[in-house]
Image 1 (cartoon, rainbow, N blue to C red):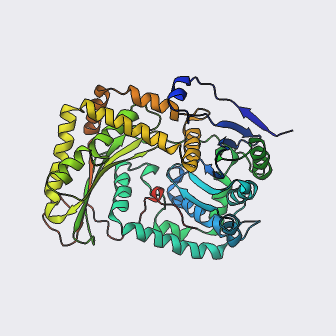
Image 2: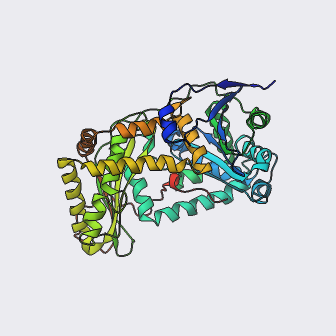
Image 3: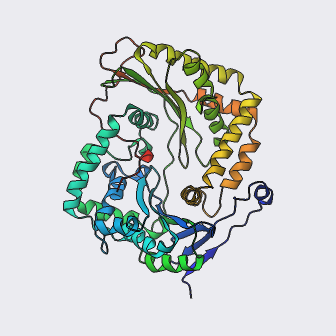
Length: 459
């Protein structure tokens, strides 16, 4: 008898399935200890993409724990109770597969892409990574150096560092302000026993989702997940995140060695995944700065060549988010480019989008969902994220319908909300640049942070 419980999805999406046949619903089952297994069997392919998501990230850490989740992501690959470091990687890569991991502010993920015949060996390796890591003192000493190097690498990249720094300013006094990788002083304080205690407390069955897409048999998968994941205990505590307060506006000029270019990052609080207004807010970002047809690209780059790189981006969390704009330009053009960006935003807020812009933004957002479903790993990731954020409901098909229903008026209101939120501005300028624009409020020379959510750990 199989020792797990079935859960069923009850939604009616026939019209969407007629339009998008690839939108089949994944199955969901739960092991007796609370681990959720979600996936889709696709017999027409020869491979499998599978990952273990742990519903805990840097925003769930205390200040003196900041960076532990990311450090554990590194350390599990140094050896487990049943595999050496070489065996962990060799079991997957030696048979043509790929294994990796990453950490975000709200979860970490350990995943592999393999041929269909390697299902059991892959499930066994992934289970050992998340259940039985050794956390040896000698390994910690070496890996600490690696993470410190990783910190410096991102500090040397003003684009990555600036996006991390602006969230630190927007979410002050909330754990979302903390960098995923932690800080050098905290990292140096961690001992092997700190990792063991943190791992025992946070890596529990009720926080884990196994998501898979590819060529496998469902019954075989459930037997394997029960076999290898049943040792995981369930937490006795209910996991609740503290919602951040409204962000505050800050303006900072940072002077450091960045060559002869200036970097401008603007950001404001945006709706989170729990807010249906996020669709309209996403369209504001698309219209303003996504792709060569966007307003900022046309006005800042194409019209007068004021910047080579300019785009909008978004960081979306369970209960809040950030909409941002990034631009890199020469020091001689910095002030003009900054002025043009603000003019473009103001004109959009005043007059709203055109009908053609709305149509294009909807097409781009829907394409992002549909295209992701054509890749096994993206598909498994989408299933897992929906499970983590929405429970036993799949949202990708509902998202398509929600995107289509957004009106021009709702996009205009989202743009007005962005203006009312007050943009936070971070300017990163060369040490030699004087009198460009703004007032120097905070020098961050020597600070080491990272936007680790954008980087996968290289095994």
